[in-house]
Image 1 (cartoon, rainbow, N blue to C red):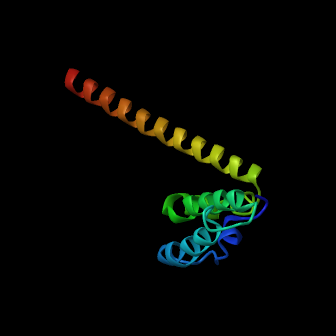
Image 2 (cartoon, rainbow, N blue to C red; image 1 turned 30 degrees about the horizontal axis):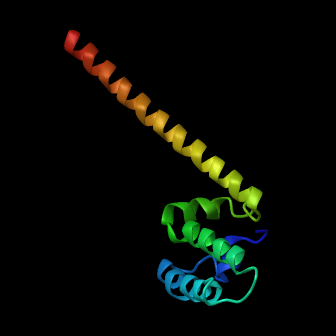
Length: 113
């Protein structure tokens, strides 16, 4: 899994979602499907294609992947990407929670005064 997701699906980074679905994923998945392919490495290739499709077909993860594309060239980069995404989601959740608590405190102070 030393290749970037764009090279796994053999597409350009500016390819739109419908082309990813239609041209890249379906074509490659059919070639590497276990019942069709006699290649002994078909299972690994099929999983690699599925992972690339899962990241690139979702707009949010694709944007995030594009931001860190250079660091995500291998499997360890992908794990680092997921870790960064989880940290981002946690920070966003904490920010929203803090904002909610602040609003409640302000409302309580306003009602008491």
